[in-house]
Image (cartoon, rainbow, N blue to C red; front, side, top):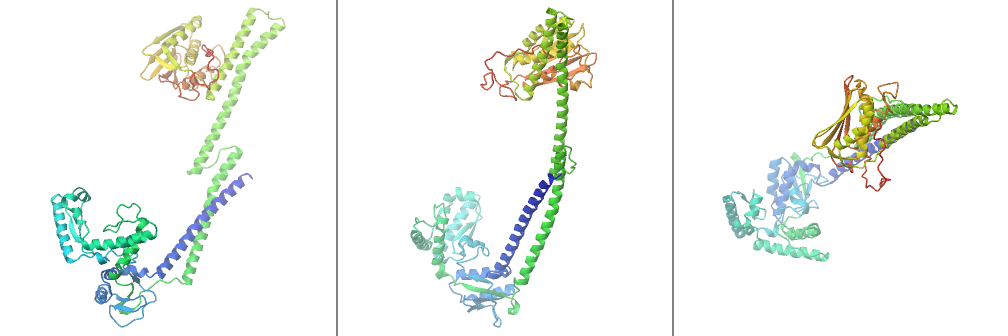
Length: 613
């Protein structure tokens, strides 16, 4: 029990600490961002009140972009005031009034609603300005005179008519500079019919645009030269032609454009929007009380998060404690939850049950091995003691009897070695082309005398192409064990038949007998080690009890299957199905005869076990 406390303490402490750190970091970051965002919204000239006055700001900014002074701004402010119901006041940066929508003089707020400067526009307030911050309506020297506009407008309409005839309609719209542009044009038309319809001619700069663009290029390249950067050539879209890295020259382009447009736009001004009658619009303030309130709420949320984290950590650690105690006491874990811990407990309980079954099987196997070895050893010892005491003569009959028991011992030990090699994945196979029908005939010939002595008829029946790739020694061992068992359990006058047939992918070897058969409840156990239907373990009716277990391992090593069908007083049939494919490189423990890592590769193949159980 004491060994589970460190695990519980470590889990709870670590889970709580990590959760609290995450909660503290997220809450602190949220609170800091909220305070910073609110403070910035209050302090910035483009404050929160601007969201309701976007129309006013955009219209006033457009006036500044199109006029180089504020002299005629009064009517614009009056119209916007009538439209929005706000009083609008425009001043210079030193708060000298430039225009007022009307009414008695009022005291202006400390902070302006917004700063109006067409050359330094906040992209959030006017997304069309892009990253340059220059109002696209500020065109300055790029504004087309009437003659150039007329020529381009005629060309644009011809291009649009040409594209319409080709099935790509578009519209002609004037940009802020007066340059006609095609809108709604399909990109495919611009690509495939540009030359045919004169789209490229429409994109050519006019003399006015070319002169302004030349001055801009000179200014930009002078800036780049001062920075020891290569010169660039700008197009009408103010982007460097052919340059892949626009960021390299963007700073010089923006500064040169501002310098070029400054004489053509109104100077920066402050915009004030007031309520009806000149009253100030409500604003947000972040006082000490508000700051204290935010901190208090943050602290409360943190305490609540800490409490919930501790409860969750304790709840999560409880089943782990039970699982740890069960592991220490070597018993199943009483965890029934349907989560990851429950799955872990179920896996632990399955592992515990398997370990108990394996331990029971180990004990049973040790007992079986001891029993199997005890019988021949007792016979050998008894006969040697009888001979030593003079009760039996030291003649050929005695040595023959002792040799039979010694061979039986060797038989059992070799079977155990084969099973141990199969369990460890070290069962070596030497695959080569084999004719299963021919191999079955050799096995039948080897067992002919034993079958005749038992009064059993042993035959072979073969059909089809029975060639496959297999280890001939191990395959003969499989068939020999099945035939030995069949002959042993078939009464005199019975019949044992080795059927060999084939399918497209398999060779089938079936050993059928007309013996006593196996009961249905015993049939699932026939391939278990040391299992016999005769519980008396009599060797008159059973061998070592390892033959069929070895058969199963050898068949699996070949990538095949073995099954058993039987009826009491009718007979049994053991069927082996083996693939015809090459075994080399397939399956655990299967090695080619030329594998340099297999010891004894040049030694003769082991012929043991050909007539074993």
